[in-house]
Image (cartoon, rainbow, N blue to C red; front, top):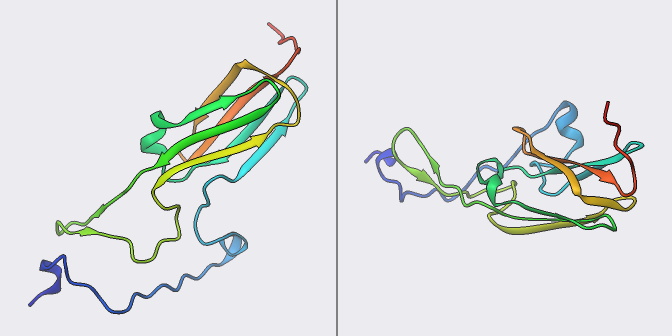
Length: 142
């Protein structure tokens, strides 16, 4: 019998060793969900949030920004079955990426903002990037 033709065949041992070199050795094993970077300029804040695996589900991301600078991002990491060329579907036995299910990420910006003046962008690399204008700042028109 050829095990490739039987998708229910399981192996008693799964090799789960992962080795890192270079900059990959400095981080953790998978792209973590919810890492946040915050930047400041004279007129605005920028924040970037790591949301790996969300790109195809980005229309389901909700980002609420409050005047006092509180940010809440909610969404769902989708369940993904991995198809192969042979027609089999694989279930994860070793999982270091974010598990499927709902999530929320809440953090505070360094100051107050105008929640009406923000520009969100979901980058192809799984980073959700938002620029939000500081409260009471006049935006140059030229």
